[in-house]
Image 1 (cartoon, each protein chain N blue to C red):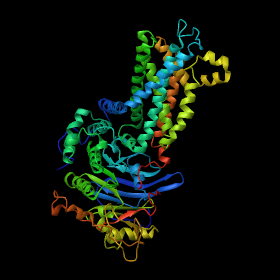
Image 2 (cartoon, rainbow over the protein chains, first blue to last red):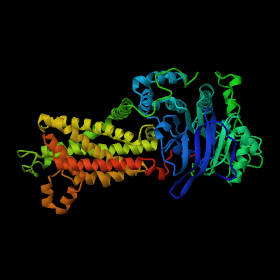
Image 3 (cartoon, chains in turn green, cyan):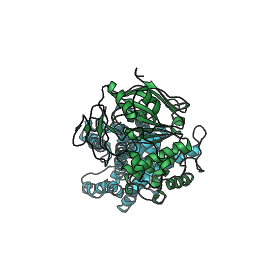
Image 4 (tube, rainbow over the protein chains, first blue to last red):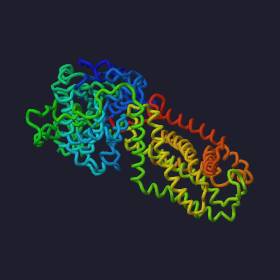
Length: 326
Length: 288
């Protein structure tokens, strides 16, 4: 665990990650990562591109085994008891993983089979879940005929089919428009609120962090802070989560690049410079587009009181190296 | 509306482990998906048949007069070259289909579909064997379609042979698909598959008894004969040839079984998260 790691977490854990390290050959991707996710909470795994989020997801979902450390899901060690750990886990990967040539029903019954459920047994739940995300009438459409947002909703339905207790989502809103992002986030937050499911939401978009969330800040393969957003902000001596993130990451020598979100209009920031695609501005933040919460006002189905409050204005923490990986 | 707690038939807290019925549901789900993918790619089915049929109609017809095949087991009389080459062409379908299966795993890995399989709570070995079994089943359907067409070309083994060849096709198919699966773990990108084509499929096919009897190869090149003898595909072809004529070639059966275990073990090792090769490469499918 890094020396400057702030941890303010408490409560029963859905996921415990203890001293996990991983390397691709000589390249270290994760170094001594430790944190835990309380059951029934929305936890944001926040980090720049290349911070190690996807590698961490791959280890939690046992695509790879941990080289060092341990991962426990509801007390089940992912190495020693992978079946029992994985059946409590629902996963939405960053890359689209639907079979585009198959229909939605065929994709979902395949997933149900991978959890030991026959087609007849699974169909009732498939129809019910698709209905709740407004896609019941697309049951027999091929996946390739869906929009990006609709595919994500189907992937979320797929992740929920076997009733997991912990849902992992890796950059689930990447490539989606503002409305689709808002819909996906609202759907997932409703799961936490109404069903008590635990969620680990990996993102590099700070405006997806709300005041009531928990957060794990990952940078350079190390956890810099973890806990309730308010506690992390206070412990970092910052005004908001963007400030806390910037302050913590600056100590590790990283550079924050603030770039316009999809559909956003870049604004000139004091002390910064505007490039074609992004505003690079040391460790200070700027507003690149209206906050995601503003977009929610255009969603007629959400009442004012239901709107989540972002913990900071909209900031996209893209890697300085475009598409680069660590 | 709640997505999670509404009444359905799926159990929120399943008992520990899996029942045989659940294993069967998983296997049939994987097989149905493989079958649907095959049906959705009709050109794959057509091309898998065109290749051996070209060999049968064009190559074999042309070489009929040049290559006489003496009486060798399992044949009891002189046979036309088309008759001799048919089991080899059945092996060719299994070989290409097995490698196609490995190609689809590389594609699935690139596209991310493979992850949905690998994060299933069923044991990894069971998932891989199920995937292999599904791939072999698709190959065997293609072989029977080929046999049906060959029947009209006067290649007519005894009727019981069509039944007895089924386990031989499955075993040979498992060996070749396992090899494909093992190789797929080492291929990072789809483009690298051309290398497999040139360095694995073609040498395996041509340096075997699929096209010429071993005695003939020995006469022309002792070195090539030795290579053919060391090629597991030779034994898969002979196993199919003998089974198609109602006999079991025990040595071929043993060797094909042995190589199946070896290749399958290698594939399971390669895809095992604890020992495998994937975790040492960057294959996370994300940029976080």
